[in-house]
Image (cartoon, rainbow, N blue to C red; front, top):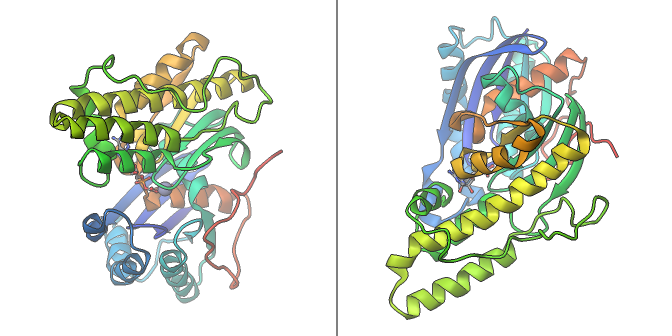
Length: 350
Ligand code: KG4
Ligand code: ZN
């Protein structure tokens, strides 16, 4: 089965073609057009995002078909998978409306895919061993989710952030430090030259007394850490030392955030006896995070799988891959397929 995927939930217009059977699904093409325009606003502007998707969705899809050696007329495509939630509704609607129009024209099934389920499938496109059962840590600009994945379609949501997403914390702290948006990579680079002992920030939502069953055992929170960084930045700025302190502050912030994410992920892996941890979302590109999680699960023989940067950030290949699996289970959307700003991941178990 060959599936065309379309993703337009935030600020990337993306299309991809995947094909195969079972877990042997390979990527035939992937086109990602990032909307750089939002950089000048320091965050995604929804109305601008929708308009940019509208301009880009047709050429991006045609390019993905061409890269896969397929005609623009749809021959060779068996189904279309499109992100329909969660995300910016105006942005999602562009992809959904286009997918429905293509499906009707080509006479192929269309399936709405949950964006976060897509992230769970992303790494498997790169690394065949990144398949269930595993512990998943999805960390992006909009989401921070810790899940147990017993099988494809069988998910247990263990923890999430109570305030800012992990990527959002990177972006906000970068802004405080006078680094560009999006802030994840600039902070990671600055932190490489930072002294880890200079600014030790408390690890958020993490203390030794936590037990399985406690509400805060898996949950995360980053706004307190951001406020702690703000205080240090203000003091350094007032003393005229911000330039010298920047790498040290970036390092202290990243260390605290990574320590929390790594420990909570290790707790989840231990509780469910998982030896694989799969990372997803833009923050999964962070090498200190990859190394921190690997260190935390090493004592139980665990291995971390991190997607390549192209598959970590928002992309249509993961949507096509998740859609491929759901279609193989007999799922299909009808003409009422719509876009939703928020929606629980399908397949959640209590
Ligand atoms: O998944 P993504 O591309 O978009 C969504 O938010 O859905 O994630 C973008 C986020 C941004 O907050 C960005 O700062 C963060 O991922 N990011 C990183 C790194 N690269 C991107 N955070 C930490 N370290 C990185 N190397
Ligand atoms: Zn995403």
